[in-house]
Image 1: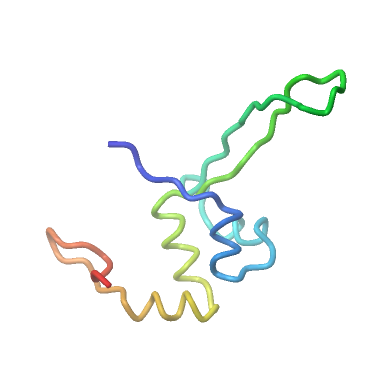
Image 2 (image 1 turned 90 degrees about the vertical axis):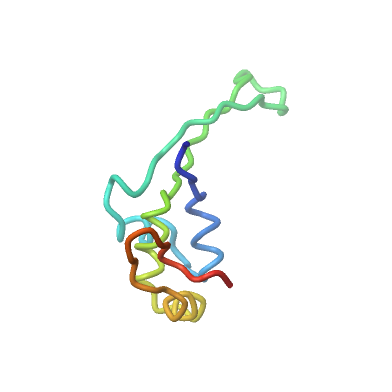
Amino acid sequence: MEEPLFLAKDVAEWIGHTNTSVMLNLVDEDEKETHEFTTLNNNYSRERHLVTKKTFLTEDGIYEVLMQSRKPIAKQWKKEVELPEEGSSFVRSL
């Protein structure tokens, strides 16, 4: 099963972080991934394809961002976190 990825820009917006690059500096390299996407350019220019890079957080990366954040939504999330026990999850069902 593949690990879920979360678009870093969306995570920053969701928690109210104003600078995605600063947020990404808070996590280790193994907690984020960068992928390239190629799309068709509709602007009738010489370049027919646009290549964009997007950075994603892994599940561990999103936990790390939330644990380091002082934003209200992160504080609320931290209150819901339970220490893991063998065979259980980190977060209670809401």
